[in-house]
Image (cartoon, rainbow, N blue to C red; front, side):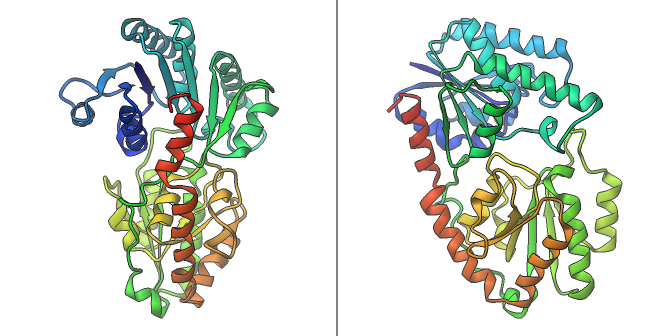
Length: 379
């Protein structure tokens, strides 16, 4: 049997779905993957082909809103499916879900699935007006049309499922399943000792994210500036990159933070484990997530977490147990949470131990994938 997995970002196929792909192959499926930016000879394509995957390069503008370009994506996916004839299709992230699901239905693929990993730019920021409101209405309509033709939709938190039902993007009786995010490989992301300086109050905080406003990057920078003004020994690291997103941080803004010593910018890292190992506490003040993968990775490596009481984020932290939950957009609350770790060096190791236990019990990627394979009728 042939299984087609559709992604909007080529590098996410192995970085985020590598264990799922391995589980599908272990179940005897011939796995095909499709994503943009996978021309012959490209490093990402070669890495995928080395896993015995059939790789397909498709035209897709991950963050664009050009209808003609999106129709080209739909047409290319339909042609691909008519040629390959997969028995099962799964798309994840917005465009692969919408256009992959529609193409699979039009191509007559017998079993069609979708994985909603978050809501994205169109749904953040509360009540919308103007162009963003029109974009949100269009996306909701496209989701409703596409998801009417899938056999099951996977969500990574219950809030997203409730929102899809409430706004009519998913019919009341349509089959759905909530899984614990993308999971984390607790073997690859093994526990590492906290930096020695944490024992004397020189806490090192870390945020890993695309540099977008809705990831809470500005709130992190503002809280870091306040904490460091009183405790200059505290360090606040930032890993990420400026994305082609309307909500992206301006390069000048980032440069100003670095010049002021507010944050230490480490850039985009292919392997985030050394950065996590070098931190005492992981911070993600995001406005909304599916389930944040970086938080799971930090938890698996034994790090306490500060994140927001927001959909997708709140599921990863039991407040006061493995970290602290703060309100969305509250710099004051974020500052106070950071100061608790500075003022009480015993918190980071104790809460980090609980994070590791939670990662093993709830977010082990093999447990998450076992649920997905079962729900898709593969095992």
